[in-house]
Length: 317
Length: 319
Image (tube, rainbow over all chains, first blue to last red; front, side, top):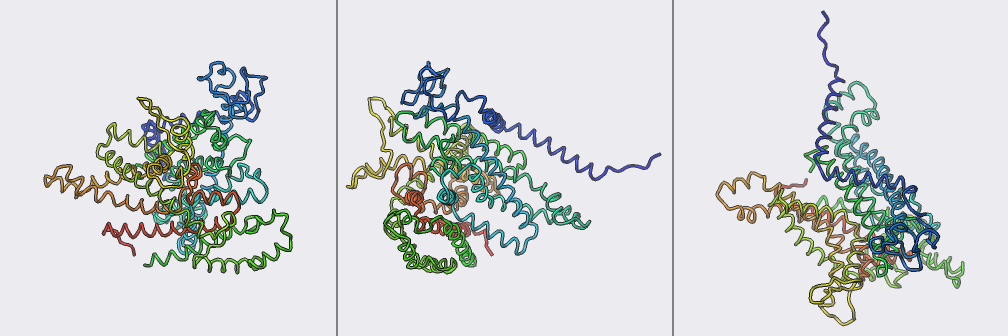
């Protein structure tokens, strides 16, 4: 007869992970608005990816009458529901120089979502790294890093962003404000809140038994931080990251609106609105639709973040 | 006291970083002169020497810091006046706009939060929390454009042929003071500015009141036989408002520093718009002065929030 076998510790751990995954999904699916947010965001992402196939026109092309009837004649064309003849040409009308609004919105989605995603990835990488160092080592490392975050959190982000982008623009030209630069600047400025969050979880995690056990068996600091502590600090980071994507999308569009972000003629929701402001009287549609896109996207992401918070940690609210 | 002392190195660090960033502004403080064909290279060199720009960066920084400490923020090239004076001149307009917006936001936000908490999980609560979510997700500049579109460009038609039409920009229609006109100009920017604040205040108030309502002392009050109304107003609100007071203290920097976006869109002659104009004209001294001022206000209001919090809630103790 075989000796009684004990379940391996690993199996127990995996069981727990499996269990928490199940509760996560059931909890998240209960949050109806978050599910709606996922669907809306998924559609937005698909629209952005397939912008090239979906857009009826080149986003920067001026319609001079070869394709659509009626074509642009110097005045912005209204959307389909105001002028039925436009439904097969420019369903959402054109802007003041005759560019197709729908095509520009689709390509604008690319900019907003890419900037949102990559700026947040950068913010998470920097913030997690510095927060983990501060929380794990404590002492003067912690003190120095936390004072640094204090400094960054004391300077309001929008004016600082504006100044930095102005510096970049002045040092070569405004065209240098490509979206890579915008991502770098936003990412480099927005990590402190993440660093604080990660530090707080690390401060408590490093005192837990499993961390001590990992230390006792001789793991290196790096291995303890990344293999043992970090996976346990993921939940708050994920929630924060989601909400920050929404925040970055608003930041980028604000920058572009003020002329310090994505530069024309590249279509971004913010810069489309900057042009629309001076033509508010003739073309309300050029001002309404890009902002509506921002609002819907940001709202969807915020609801997803809310749902994630409820699902990952009901005590956080 | 100890916290006050901690604020000093923080402010110093902020000033070093800001100085470092702005010092890298291409062209430096003399950028406006470099484009001028009437100013020769020798003139530039002389200006550089006179202004001390040929000295090592740390020396320049220390000198600049010394001036800041006595309120001398340098000379604003885009306004042709000292930075300090330029900021002070715009201050009343910003304070007017932000003060009104803040009062509106507190009044509506706190009321909405209370209603939301008292009638939790009813249609009213869902409506308020949904609106708060919208308010938080709204891009401010677009909301401003929509307000201009609705109220300034087209006007909202009322029965009997009246049309609500509001001015879309500026602070007044003429130089002579007219209260009604002033109010007309305030309405749109105040709506735009207070939206986000209303959303924040209502969410804070709701969660804070819900927390208070579930405490033991509230149950004790109920056990004494007090009506819900008495419990809510006498015990509940007093405690639930404490976090709201802190949030108010934390929004102080905006109250004084102004809102760059809203002021720019509505052409409000305040500090936020001053900053934006300085930005488009590379007015280094003014950008620097503005950022330093606002950062100082942030540090100060954080401190104030802590102090007020400890004062209102004796359970809180700072070491």
